[in-house]
View 1 (tube, rainbow, N blue to C red):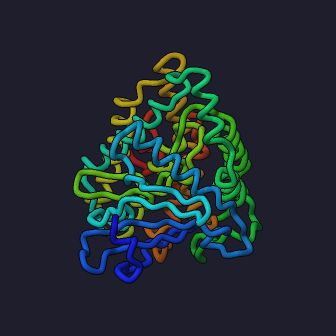
View 2 (cartoon, rainbow, N blue to C red):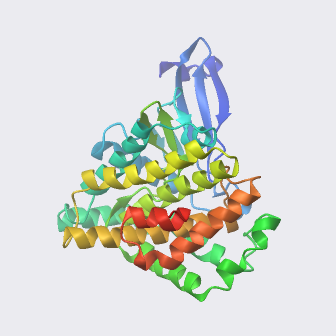
Length: 360
């Protein structure tokens, strides 16, 4: 990218609306096809403001994770060019022709092959960086490189703790949802299971995970997909990634059902099933009996999906799929409550689908 050597030849355009970081596109004024993405980590949570400080080391973690992910499953993430430790800036490939998966799904656009591509990438990353595959020395090195960070603590707080704390000031919801919060706060089983899932999230050192896998952190181009925003990466339970992804497909289902778009809503159920099938086809690193591993994994997926749905409706970081759609948000909240309540009885994707969508 020689054009960046001449500041007068560089056009800078802000892109993205992430909760944590600032992202800009640097483009050659004389050649619009020549560009790169610059990502900057401010010392606070962007969506909450300077009064919520956050370590800037997340940029270094993300850079290392991007390299690790692309090594395991080539092309699963944008290429990285370099990371500047002083300015806390990552320079990476500009996926100009790719589109944000969440915004595509809001419009009712997503292919089965793109869903397979996502599941295959994350399964391979898990497989190649799994405790069952790595030597003790390599696993120790992975744990040291991707251990407990401020962002893992952020997930602990904003996924598993604050949304389940009735009077936490960072929580917010629309009037229709507020009338239903007793489903969470007056339900001892929900609160106990949220604590249980938090314990698994923090203590199960299984494999390298994305740590924040949702439809807004994935870019798609026809049948291909790339994973983005990997600063939350750490060694944890593989089911957390899959559970968060499934949760986002479920929320999309309720968005489209509320709008009468049943055809695409039903496609999101296919996406969940494809995700499960493709993941297990590629995820061949596991400990213990395979049948028991799958049952435990799916139970954890259900619990994590329930937590993700609830926190996206009651917590600080909502999703565009449900914003301005109160009936969809209420229905999705019910799905999250059912999944988290029944997580220890869910051991297949089919059961998860029945409970999440109240299918008969």
